[in-house]
Length: 220
Image 1: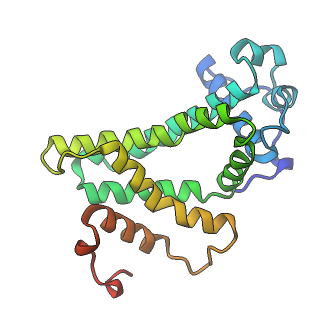
Image 2 (image 1 turned 90 degrees about the vertical axis):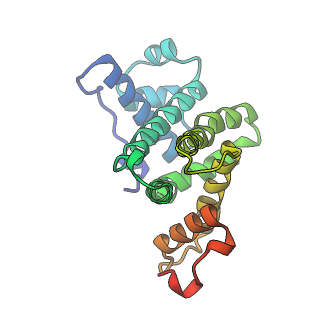
């Protein structure tokens, strides 16, 4: 669901454990960063929306950038947890695993608020290189490590040759995400774009190369 600024509401944290309240604060702060931008979001604004004092935030984080990194890490870890639990991955073929995970990733990165946040990150990376590097470490690099671990699992079962799994993970993500995200950012990802056909093509190309691809008219 798309999020507009007027939908970000302030309020006291929900009841629950300290861990749950902390997680909720991270999620609310990340929504603010996505909607209003990093440079435009103050600690006071975050505190107001999260229903806490600025002192509470500064007791946990050195500054809003540290809070942003923690919020991104929290989001990515939730996504990784969801992906590795998709239909018992250990009992699937690698093709099934890459298809299920790829579908999750593709849907995620094409969400309107994620596209907006990506644009914000690109715009602010030039004057905050340390932040950009930190965001990469808790974002893409964490996803690459997850995929690398999956490839290692299949290699240990002699179902995949030993490769540079980290590089393979980076390549898979690039094939899957780069083109549709770029088109979506520029508003040229047409309504007739077939996400499943793209996903099938990418998985087959990644696993089998061009020689292993089915004829183009076989991809529905």
